[in-house]
Each structure stands twice: as structure tokens, then as C-alpha cells.
Amino acid sequence: MRGIDFDFKVSMVADLIVQSKNIVVFTGAGVSTESGIPDFRSPGGIWTRFDPEDFTIDRFMSSRETRKKTWELLGGSGLIADALPNRAHHAVYELELLGKLECVITQNIDNLHQKAGCSPDRVFEVHGNMQWVRCLGCDARFTMETIQRRLGENIQVPECEHCSGILKPDVIYFGEMLPQETLDHAIHHSRNCDLFIVIGSSLSVYPAAYMPTHALESGAKLVIINNTRTFCDDRSEVVINSMAGVAMERILEDTKRKLMH
Image 1 (tube, rainbow, N blue to C red):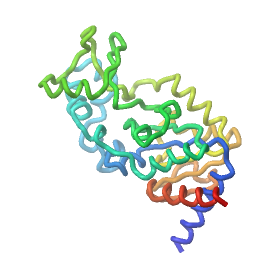
Image 2: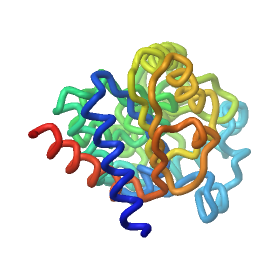
Image 3: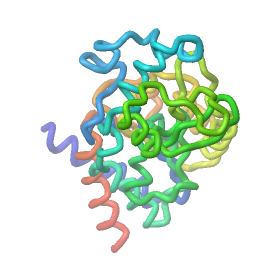
Image 4: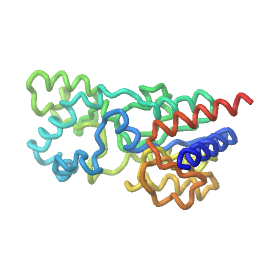
């Protein structure tokens, strides 16, 4: 029965996609983990091995030792840089190719939607992007690859080559405000879509998790694809408790078949 139920829900989502003209996709850590990137908050995730207090903006600014830990964990690791898009990322890109995707709002920092082919101007990264490093002094921007080369030269805590300011991965730390312009765009698109699809997010991190609520309040239909329950399940047209890649691959196959008829 479970297989029949899954197939039925896949068909329902495909029907909603076919009927929609303006789809917003919202992705969370459950999409990244399928590309081998560890989750931060889940059991066995990064916060079970490192102290989250070391990743507050205040401690990062005030402690050279904290910055060193940051570069050991984030800057010196090729984990994100070497990760490849998975089936879920490719399926979202196919929505764009079908002319259905208005934008992607993502909590992920791995650049994998762009690697899969999504137009960068359609991807709104509310928690930043690990491909970039920003100077907190003069606001200069560097690629992570550039900084990693310097780390490879035994520089433990890199500084800005322009002003000697503190360099920080261009992602949101605890205690930091989300990028306002990106957030404004995300809210605007959420309020103006006709279908909002959540993929791989438990919707537990705010304010990003308010996005489906903005969509619902504006009359959009909601689909949730996630392994665990969310606070929006009861307001959704369809809830699929599944791995992101498995569900999205099947949904796209069914959508393309229905569009051909």
C-alpha cells in the first residue's frame, strides 16, 4: 500500500505542477545531505562535533582562535567545494527548463542549485554562499578557492589583502541578520507564486521558515517533500515523507509525461 500511496501523491504533485505557472521551490538541508554534505543540526551533524558557540558572529569577530577553528572546519575543507548536485537539484533545474520555476529560495550554502544549472538570478540564498569570502573591513569579496590557496600556504587565519581586515565566509552566522535584499526578494516571490514546494526542510529555522506561510496567505498551494513532519503539513495539498531525490525524480518524470499529453 505504501508504494501505491507514494505513486498517488507523486501524481498529485505532477498535476499541481502542470496546472501552475509560477512555482517557488524552497530547499533545506535535506537536499544537501543527499550530496554528501553533513547537516548542522541533526543527530550526528556538525553541532554534535563542534560547539555552536564558536560560530556566533560575536565570537568570530573577537577571537582569533575562533576564526582559526572556522577556517579549519569550513575554509580548509573541500567537502562543499567538491560536492555535486543530486537528483533533487537536477529536478528543480528541469522545472526551470519547463518554464514553471519562478525561483529557488534555499537555506543551503553549497551553490549546488547553480551547479545543477539553475540561473543564479533565480536562486535566493537566505543563509549565504560558501563559495565566497567577504572582508568585514572594506567589504571586498574573494572566491573561497582563492582563500583556500592561501590556507594551503600555511596561513591559518587569512586577512584581507586590501585592508588587513577580518575575512569571513560569506554565510550567515548565529547572531547575524539575514541579507535584507535577498530576504525581501524571497518574501515577494513567496507572496506571488501559485505553487510553493518545500523540499528537504523541517521548516524550523526562522525567518526563512515563514516563506510557505507567506505563500499560503496569498492563496498559493503548498507541497512538502521531507523525511519528517513540519508545522505546515496540515495546510499542504500534498505531503510526501521521502528522500528528496527519489521523490523529485519521480515527480518530474510524471510531470513531463503529463505535459506531453
